Image 1: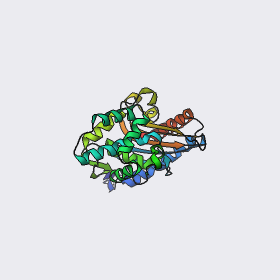
Image 2 (image 1 turned 45 degrees about the vertical axis):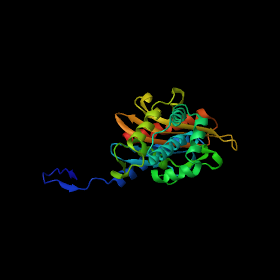
Image 3 (image 1 turned 90 degrees about the horizontal axis):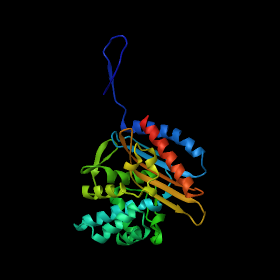
Image 4 (image 1 turned 90 degrees about the vertical axis):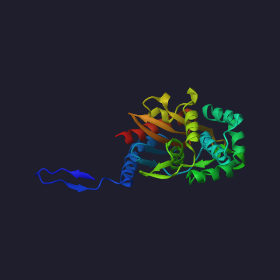
Length: 275
């Protein structure tokens, strides 16, 4: 409870502290204002989701679904680790080799090999049901990069990976038991912290030290339109506080302009969260 100060010296009256829902709503509104300036500067679409891991305050801008491009590689690895956990085994040397280059270098051949191993779109969808993703659907005909997702769902995935302890922390309270074991989560976090420098753009632009950001990016030119999908997800530390951030976008004329929009959106969203 908060205490309300009184100038007449009378005892302060108690009033309830703002609820988590009220804080989230306020953050949503402030973020929408900040991101409108980014939207005004581009013809592309984008969506952003942010979670303050300290307070669990959460904001989402935009609810549309986007192609994942290579950010799905984090989801593929999570699905692989769930299968290994179910079987009571460690990843094989080959699986670890594929996982490392898939996340650190965004190797597509490795992603295709692990996509097949998890059972393709059906296997990914089954894993995502356990992970709590409700609006993510695996790409058809082996096209894992055309998996569809939302920024809110990517935030859910990041929570599963970056929450420490046996329970996933959601909406200001300890939620259900984490689907991924702590060793599995630590493994994904480690690989996301070792992405090669040339692929470390994106949400890292909002960080105190971009080199310490743990992230995965995705970029994909669409042959039907000639326009680009550009996405970035990860854990960012800014002004000493830690955030989970997902920025999804499409409709860019080229990769570089997409990266610029994603980075502006990440900085604007974190600027609101830090205010």
